[in-house]
Image (tube, rainbow, N blue to C red; front, top):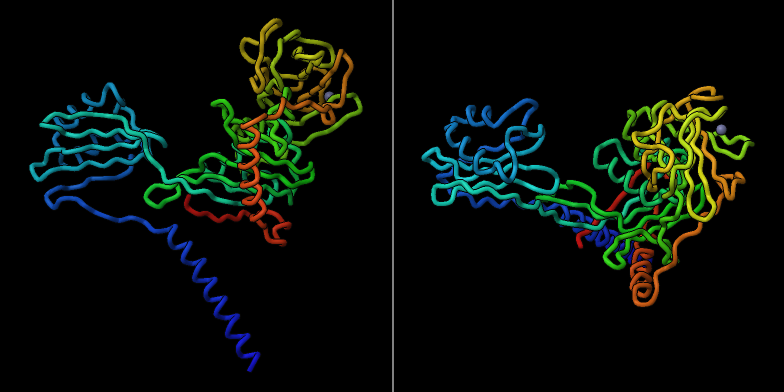
Length: 415
Ligand SMILES: [Zn+2]
């Protein structure tokens, strides 16, 4: 009998749990389908096809081209309607007199053109597209490279790039990631009419992998948004981890074919990055170009002088970027040249060196100090946010079998 009650209790608990979970999911997916259109109005809506113009749309729908002319004229100062983006949506509301009441066109992810007929005259305005924000927790187990691990869609790519920008001072996304490394992410997801449209800001992220453990927290100090480590110091440092930006490498090449860039360390105090010919090379830190030209085995070489006696060298370049010459100031992340095989090089690669007071150091081990931590009230506020994010991150638990890699999981809730 005791056993019967135990079973009853367990099944009730399970039912309650499932119902609760299901309820949550359901509430999230609820799509509003309220229609308040008046019966004497006709709606023409669709998505712009490749090569299609509004002329085609109006003609096909039997609308007067004089109306289109007036709409174009009214919109001219807000948004030109001569070139439309394929894939962008439009909606025309027409009265039973076959005159256009309103015309809506999605300009981009963030704004739409709204043209209305007011007292017989068209008035156009650009309106921001509002999204419903939900915080979402997800994990990504790395397989091959970050982009394909998250997914190959445009939205997924933007999330991968955002992640690579946040950790760009600590991780070289092209060569530091290993299969089985895990990212945990607390991210805003933007919805419209119940449909997921795009990712917003990453609020917090954690990397657990071969290269170590890193955490990032998005925090605003003095009107400036930055990512901070758990100690309240900004993640940004004087030098990026690598002169080849993951964002730039990935966006230039077919994602499906993108493999991790090979990194070959040679005992000559430099790092060689094997990368496709023409891959953009970035300055790892702010500084001044003190050499730009040919130098023996280096081939085309750029030397940048930074603060504190640091210099960085970028060799074997196929060419320098426009405007890069001796005496020019460069900023962190700026493209200075392109990967090549000039000088003593077998195959296209970038030779990268960091020197302190002229002495080469191992760039992979060079310890670059972080900026000062937050203080006072800001630090207290940061700690509260960090602790809240830590709870969120701790609740993200990739299943054990995820270690086999290639998994993405997520859950989301409204905020
Ligand atoms: Zn080298």
